[in-house]
Amino acid sequence: MIRESYRQKEENELVKASIDGDKLAFGEIVTRYQGMVARTVKGMLGDSVFAEDIGQEVFIKLFQSLSEFRGEAKLSTYIQKIAINLTLNEIKRRKRFFSMFTQSGNNKMREYMIADQNTEERKEASEIVHKALSSMDPKFRIVVIMRMLQGYSTKETAAMLDLPLGTVLSRLSRAQEQLKGILRKL
Amino acid sequence: MKASVIKELLIKSLDSDADPGDISRKLEDAGISYNFSFEFRDKVLSRISAAGSAKVRELELVKNFNYAFYRIALTGVAAIVILLISIFLMQGSLSFDSFLGLSDSYDESIICLLTGN
Image 1 (cartoon, rainbow over the protein chains, first blue to last red):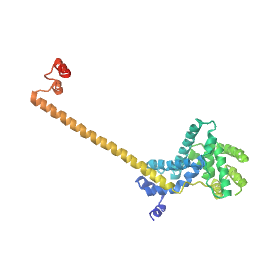
Image 2 (image 1 turned 30 degrees about the vertical axis):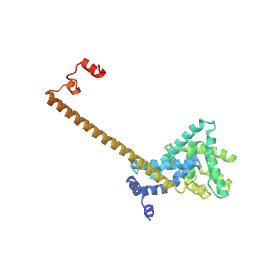
Image 3 (image 1 turned 90 degrees about the vertical axis):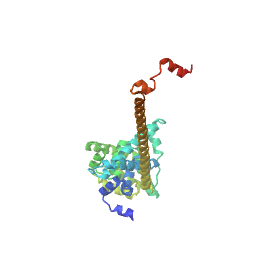
């Protein structure tokens, strides 16, 4: 009943209430944006328990920095930027960690990815996307995820990643070439 | 959705003139969706609460230290003032030696006092 009333609330009301320490209001923000964060984090890191931890970190960081949020940008953009930064940091950290033990860090990383779809067809579709994404260079992968899974326009992707529009366009084109090569082998 | 259709859709999604919103919806319909576990929200909230109470504990510890420091410092200052007043009343003047209790002692008597000979 109480949670239902939070569902009706505007975003800025939820932000204000969260800053004042209302945990239920922040819980509603988590509910609204966890899908978006999951697409970015799991798309980049694979469907693993580590991705869930990073997802939690995203919202904890959001809670800690919520008082600095001035509302100039959308809350979704603010959350997305935190998710992108934490995910890219995690990739760098993992690369460093795995490179201490093996030369092929990327291959080892992929072993942590676990598919969770049920039906055969859905499982196959999901596996194709997982394999394609995990085989891509992270700087192309993030552009592809913003576009393909989040549904952002090229302009929005550029703003989200703090990149010039031209860079995003060239990365998309190079990512498409890379993707064609990867999908041919699958 | 067949694998070949998915592959086609993935490649098309990166075309500069493609509608990314439409493609992401189609991919979601095909089963490419990403979600966290059912209890994700509760886990986030409990981690926030745990971090909050740890911070409160830390602040309380600092507050207690500050309180203890002020109590000790004030008592110390009061003791020094009482000592100075008592020295002044007993000897009629204040000197550094009398403050340290050395007014009647010579170097040799201190050595005797310390060594016991």
